[in-house]
Length: 417
Image 1 (tube, one colour):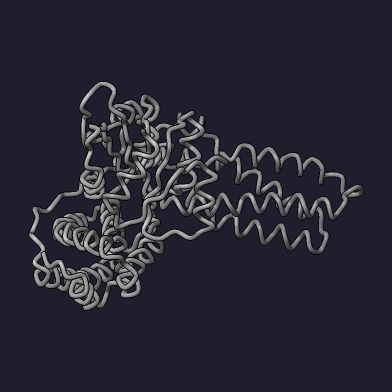
Image 2: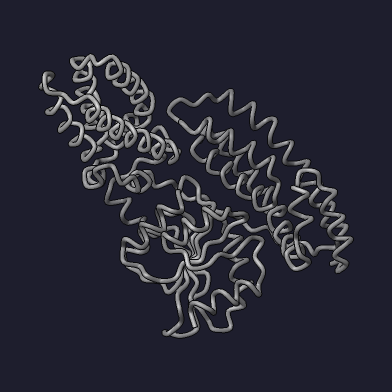
């Protein structure tokens, strides 16, 4: 591989889809680490493309969107920001699989995949010019989305009731979740308008409708708050308008946040594969991969939560592992939470880019289960305010991608020894 950093940087800057400003700001160490990461990602792309196109041919749209999310993450790690955002925009607009339009997916796939082919070809040409050694492609396994566990991350919902739902009932409940956003917008407009003109009889009718919606949604606490307000509002003669306005604004604000949280989960229109609850529990740890078994019974356990198997291997290689750690890899937040029911790792490595997951919420869940091990957060870019937010939730340290071996070894050692 060419060791002249100026030449290497010039070659990288010739790839038009990669963010040039990011390349210019890289140190020599970061740049050569990034080149290795490019090699891994570009090599894996044909396999990812084949899997996506197979799922598209089979009209398995759940899997199509899972592969699009994998590709979007790969593009983000390659700093191909424009392509990554284009892919992310399509995923966000079309994530509602209950209302999918196959023709729209076909148009996007027919346009986007050839664009990616050209980009990956450019990357390969640069890698050849830099004399980067070819590697064997690493296949990434896509695991089924655990829809139930995704929903259970929403704190405003009755988790006990949702946990006990049979799959048929859960499919019906998914339709309620998908319809909540539009239903809420209509109810919000009705409440605000009737409150504005002080038509309290209509306000009461609207509150009754909101309560029914929240009961269907299993948002028990919010429904209870709404019921209290209904009881207060029945006495039209003694209503204090300002107090009523504050209470309703608070209720609507809580519902708006819940609506946003539901949309952010990118839930399918129905379960990808209908299984009994017993079958689901048996499969709860199917995603757990032992990356390194540890060299002794006293070996420290590090849980890596990252959807990219190749990142886990990169981290393992960067660690060097002279201490013989036990490395465990999981590809989804849901699997991590299931794994932690019976395990207590000595350290967490959590990546920013987990599909359908708010990492801040995941960290709060980890801490809520009594897990006190240090958390290291990996990210490509992170703003100061977000960094502070994560630290307040429990993050001890940050490692910026592309990861540098010295940085990994220093920070892991700092918290485990």
